[in-house]
Length: 333
Image 1: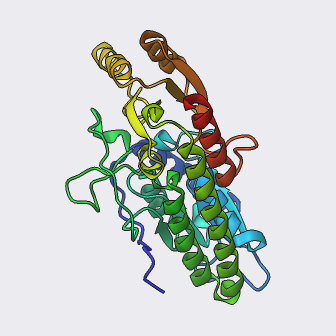
Image 2: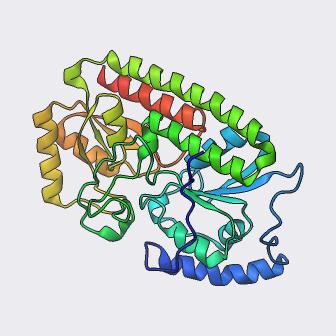
């Protein structure tokens, strides 16, 4: 088994949401005291007990649940429909991290605030960053953002070039996430390793079938129509995997509204490219996307999912990806 990308919690440093994290940590100390403290560092999960796993997003939490099954209790720090880029943890989130057997992050700057959370909570659990240094991945450079503090990119592990963190929207890369989750759970709970690895193998097969279905669906779209405009820079891995072109994005990163000049440039790019639709994203307000679509005289298509799961059928990673593919194919074909 290759070494897992476990990382010791780093010292506190300024990151997006740092002040909110610090406040949450102070409040959490009172919360933990009221609850009688946390489990002893070496206690772990006893025989027959479920592993306590904390993930930063609902997408990652679902992957953990698919692999761990009845052997894990998984909590997502960012709630369904929440915004991972600007999330502010609560004292209960700090307590959950402090008491976890395993903490699962995406890495690549997407959930950079979680590093402070882990460090400040005094967590003793291993921390795994699923997207970091992933074998077989062709990392895609992030667009240059006007405000580097948004936390939607990282330069730490990839030289001076910022990297887009949304790897899981390529289903083949999501399967690599599953491998790491399987290794991490088996390492934390070796007594159930065989069961965990069997569940992971079955889930990877399910993902392989999903990948094939998406490819077959998009293959039916004429090549000159495979152009999309998304709300933010979340879909380059999806586009690269499934032979689409991202003509542009409405905002470079959540919370960064474009200037009038940038909107004009995007509208011109849409018209020149022949893109047929602007796709909104489920957890973001769609008014700006509708304005762009109206000016470019193209349709607005309902919310895609990326950083967060939603209501059925998008309440699992597989369901989310199937719905995304169906919506894109319907709009472009």
